[in-house]
Amino acid sequence: MPDMTPDPLAGRPPEFAVRAPGAPRHQRVVDDEKVRQSELAISLVLRVGVSLAVALALAGLGLTFARHPGYLRLSGSSYHPLTQLGSHFPHTIGQLGHALAIGDGRGLIGLGLLVLIATPVLRVAVAVLTFAYEKDPPMTIVTLFVLAVLVGSFFVGGG
Amino acid sequence: MYVQCGVTPIDFVAVLLVISVFAGVLGSLVGLGGGIVVVPVLTLVFHIDIRLAIGASIVSVIATSSGAAATYVKERMTNLRAGMFLEIATTTGAVSGAYLTTVVPTRALFVLFGVVLSYSAFAVYHKRHATAVLTTSSDRIANYFDLHGSYYDEAEHQEITYKVTGTKVGLAMMYVAGMVSALLGIGSGALKVPAMDLAMHLPMKVSTATSNFMIGVTAAASAGFYFARGQIDPIIAAPVAIGVLGGAMFGARLLGRITNTAVRIIFVGVLVVVAIEMLQRGVL
Image (cartoon, rainbow over all chains, first blue to last red; front, top):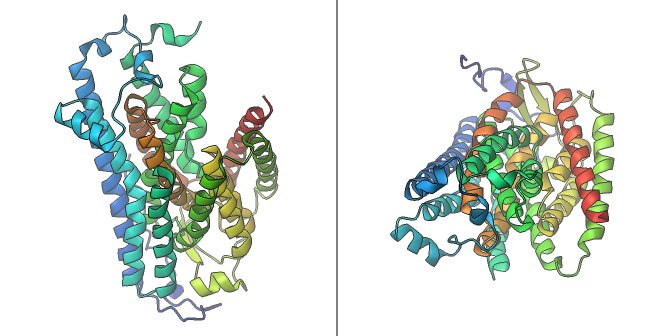
């Protein structure tokens, strides 16, 4: 299939750069170039995060099946012992380190999942920087607040 | 008759992977996490404990969000400023919800949530053909933070510039959405999309893309907790994460090309299913 995605900037009307009607009170000076760079930076963080997570999860799945050839057989074994509440898999940092050290595929998967979980948090952190780069104090403060609540919630939930 | 008798680990991983691709496509289109597909499949088909299914659902929400948002943000479908601004309410709502888990009767909440979603489904269906966007806004918060935006609509072949209003109502609904997702472990996107589409007048596609962008942050707030408690099983979560990410990246390329009316109708269909699921959990 040919890549039909048009350049998102192509149809942009010329007045985009000038936020005319209902202009904000603090008169945000919009630098199109900077806004675009910020969007691409946030998109890149998400892309790198998910790619890394998928690569680790795939490698971990591959390793798990390679070390347990029985899992690959089309009969004779059941998935059930692997997916019960009591089944053994790493879920603390210490267990994760141990699983990685002994080459357990589930350790790699766990690492990939942590990367996946960290991606949205990192995305908020990058947004704090990009709004500061765009010289937009109100939005910088807003994003900083979100980041603080998010980081705080890890302690609330984990504690 | 239950399928799990002859299901081997490789079958399980392969089937879950395929279903997760579907969940990712659907989730990225309507701005929900894909948990609505993953949870019933895991519990009803594979007879997996609900706690592990919810852990997998959290993974699928983050995967849908980050996978689709990478594309939506690049194509300027997401309203970054409105999304970030509304996250003030979703994150604080999620924290309040975490504190309330012990005092709020969950069953009653499921019923209430089911009723609210049924109403939203009706309201979104009612305005399914609406295409007009606001050209002026007297909302002081939206003007101060400059939450207005524009996107290129591939279905209509033109740049759509829109204004945002109703930020106070939007913030209140987002706070509730964050609280509900912390209390019930699901459903934050189902409230976020109507908040933006109905209350704040964002175009439907922008609403689902922006909801998609936000749900990852709401879910990440509780994901660490689920991981530490051992509710995220790698053999379940790996195929879910991989499949959903693939599906979400595909779905994100689809959204631009379909009309706002089509997105609304798909959303209403999904919402009705979720509402029934909620009512069932509250009543049974």
